[in-house]
Figure 1 (cartoon, rainbow, N blue to C red):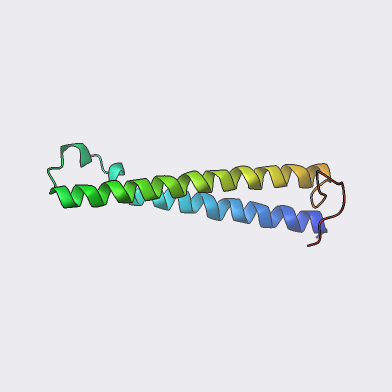
Figure 2 (cartoon, rainbow, N blue to C red):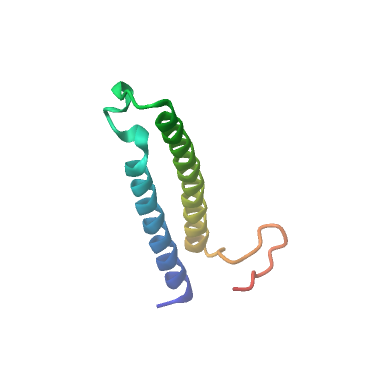
Length: 94
């Protein structure tokens, strides 16, 4: 396996792990429950669910940005420019 193939495999693995985490977070989101809108929970429960939803949403947003970074790195690897600084054109140390 070439160095680039190895990098592409690692990036693919990281993308899959990230996608699995997003799926898991979406399932854990209290707002994903279809009965949430009609739930008559106590105010303190509602606040906890709101905070949990906001935390999960923020984490999903960060993970989606990570996927964009992974996709960009994969594209650079396929073009042969992975590991090269875009500003100075020098090799980036592993």
